[in-house]
Amino acid sequence: MKRMASRKIEPASIQPTSAQVGAKIQDLADWRGEMLARLRALIKQADPEIVEECKWVKPSNPRGVPVWSHDGIVCTGETYKNAVKLTFAKGASLDDPAGLFNSSLDGNVRRAIDFHEGDKINEKALKTLIRAAVALNTSKS
Image (tube, rainbow, N blue to C red):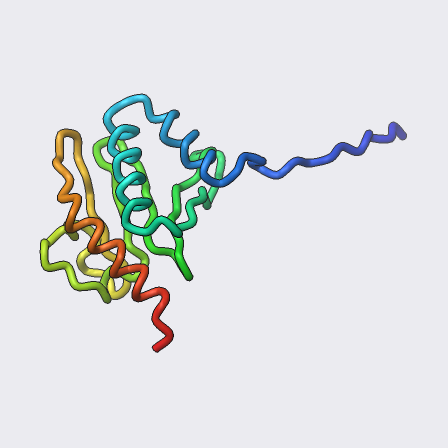
């Protein structure tokens, strides 16, 4: 019987987590990459201590999904053919006075914002929403 050589299996990605998100954005060489990059910058401005990484790597999505966390998931950044979706893990518990949430409105936990090509971002309201999500995660009540 022929003996198979053992080989070391490397993790799916050995890039630092921020580099993983950057690589995901670079792979999107269209308006979706630009939108995701802008959203990423706003998220980091709203909470400089936020941790970003890519999760849920699979063959159909080899770069995974960008995830921003601070004491738990704050939001994820999924990309689709016609939208970039920012999903807030506990969005149903957040006040949204500016009415940013426009997707996943029927759920009991999550809420999302779909951004389409050419959409303007209400930067002030988005940063307020990010900060509220972080505050919810960090509250010990």
